[in-house]
Length: 163
Image (cartoon, rainbow, N blue to C red; front, side, top):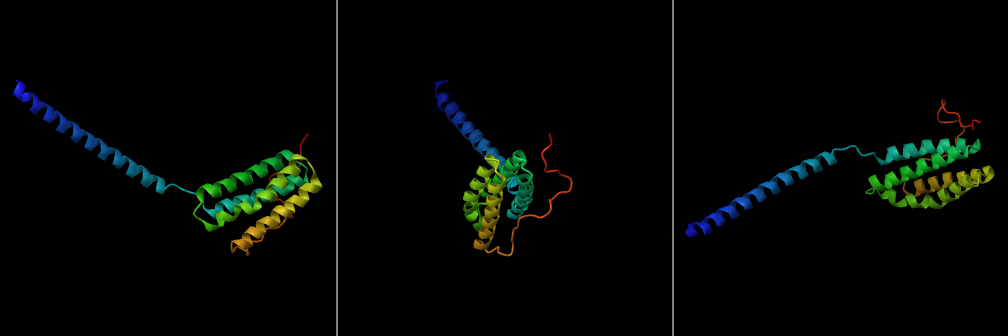
């Protein structure tokens, strides 16, 4: 019986190694499958983010004009979330590197909303709009000119404060 012990140990080691190799193959197959699914998952493009920012930019104007400061703050946060989305999902785009040039204008506008100062809001909103256009020019998108909106982007939203 003692002479079979080394043979039994050798057999145990071989079986254990094969099981480990099989587990590794199974795990690698699962990883490959998940990576494939992830590569096919929808990821918003730069244009989708910018279109959303443009809508929130317009809504922000009407919120501030109506001194609806809670809505103005909400719209500012929506713009910030979209900018973060660009940095997260579009990091490979050269334009993403220029996004920071609007930070000062964003901070100033946030401050005017916090102070609930309409005149300051109007100045800082114009400054933000100009910063957006400067960014567009710097990234060869000068044909995309943003302006202060004249009419609300949606006819089904009331921007006035309700008591």
